[in-house]
Figure 1 (tube, rainbow, N blue to C red):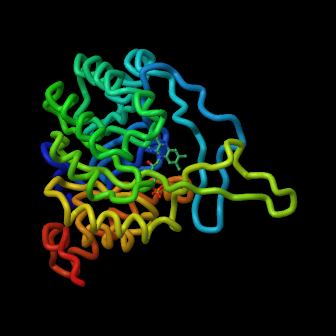
Figure 2 (cartoon, rainbow, N blue to C red):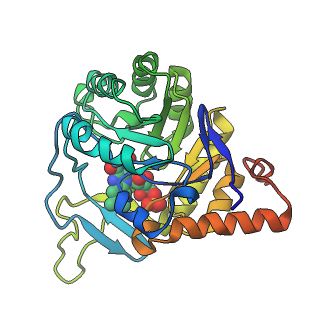
Length: 301
Ligand SMILES: Cc1cc2nc3c(=O)[nH]c(=O)nc-3n(C[C@H](O)[C@H](O)[C@H](O)COP(=O)(O)O)c2cc1C
């Protein structure tokens, strides 16, 4: 099988196809080999364990999924003692650890602790979470906070430092530029959009918390536009996601400027989506006699 090599800053990937945080676990790898995947991005880890939000916290909408998982995770210590060794034993592709904090200090504490462990190739900063130092408003909303976060964290690691942007902002390019100026080495986008569904008969929200995060095919045009905008605004490589289900979807994101893509909601619909996307990309490029570099960022308007 010919590999489709790409890179994300310092990270060399054998495939541009990866998986989005929170939508894929080691069990998914039982369905197919890892050769199709460029990297494994794990569920976001926080300093302390989180039980997540009360149910119902998942709702399948007309064109995608609304989730309100609430960053449920076992916390940093358990991740290091239980999960990381399992990931390291199972994976032969780069592992990117997604992390989140409630303050810049907490992000720093998590990275410094993880730097003492082996088997981690990069960090993905989930900045869609509330910042207790800024009235609970998400980190990713303020360019100056994103700059400060990256500037603080970058000196702590030589590994790939990926900032995952929230689409729930007015000017995503300004946030991406702040991440670049602060020392991030790549950008991931997009996290979920705000979404809601209401039972029209009872008037009750389908999600206990009222509003959740919307993902899947319905957000694809938004994700594509934001990928295109950010690719024009910064030099950093981009790992793009948002409604990618097929190899044709993946190609659109590569044309728009992504160096790699991730499948999220698609994994819940078809556990074989990732190898199918890989095979489709491979066939398309072979038939057209193109390399990935002929596609990435070459969208014409
Ligand atoms: C059930 C679920 C859980 C998620 N958990 C996380 C998470 O822990 N950290 C994170 O950064 N993004 C999380 N996401 C967002 C995805 O990683 C991805 O950015 C988003 O779903 C858009 O991609 P998609 O449309 O392909 O699903 C989650 C998404 C879903 C659907």
